[in-house]
Length: 123
Image 1: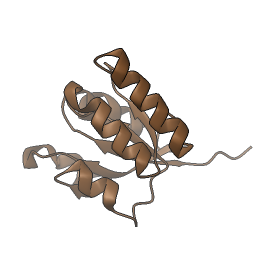
Image 2: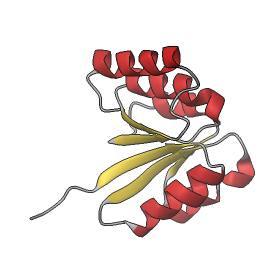
Image 3: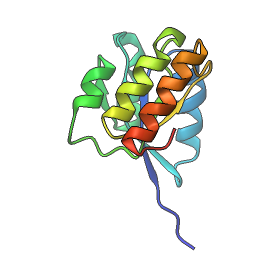
Image 4: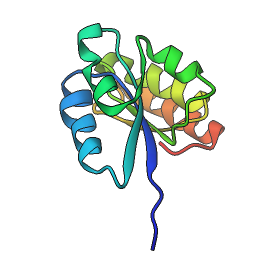
């Protein structure tokens, strides 16, 4: 049985983005390929070159890139950006895995779920 390699873009390269998500995705290379990484800090762009991924200084630019071949966005932005980043990714047509905390309050959670339903994407 063959499995599809999922193409993943990661927004945020802080502790969880780089040391947890990218590290694990790198180890599971038959299942996942990191195709893009966004982070505002240039010193956090080492994974871009290591993985042959496309790099972005701003996650909005990553989401606006219509040529980006990603099946999944991992949102590991700072916690206060989880809702905005997730909704933007869903609205751009991506499936999203959001780092914890998923949302800072119930209204934000409800907005994320509504965006997933409206865009017919997985959250």
